[in-house]
Image 1: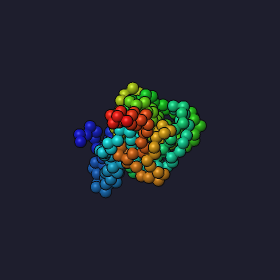
Image 2: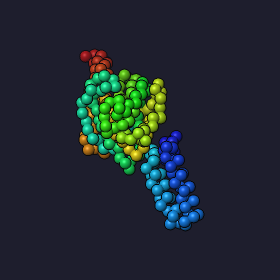
Image 3: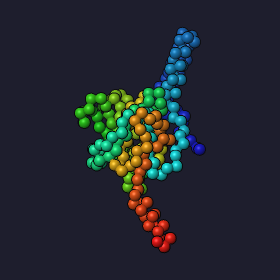
Image 4: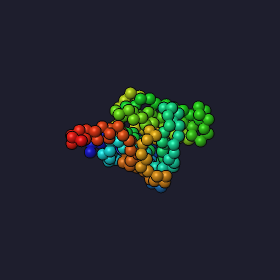
Length: 226
């Protein structure tokens, strides 16, 4: 598989380079022992900002996990973004996992939202970035990236109106955060609370297209003359 992205997310390059360069300066003045902690820290950051290739499952109706992490909750809620009832899957990102987030399904980006604690009254989460994805079959999924620090705002790679593929890189949450996926109410959830997920590879849920199945059944009946 061809790779269009580096093995280390670009958002980490400046910090890694600064630490590595500081290590060379420290070695000049203080010797190897003075440089070693800075070089080790640059290696740690390189690991934290890694951006590994993922194998996207062949599941057109599947909703893949947008982040590495653990499922915190699965609940039926009212979706304030699209004004509908929805199934919400909440994921806590790992502090040691990859920070790159991925699109849960293929589709068009219809709209973005940004809100803060002052907007919705929440004290724990200071910043939320939400992205509305719509498939060619008009399935609507909302991806929310949330952090508890104004200094570590999530990064969004795509703009409203763009098209994005299932499992494609769509953003980054530095040092982890919380992810919410708001699904159609009839989507079949495929995970349980406590499950460990890998972004782009593990399937969260499956979209249900009953009208498509019914059409296929009618076509088969006609073909068989029943």
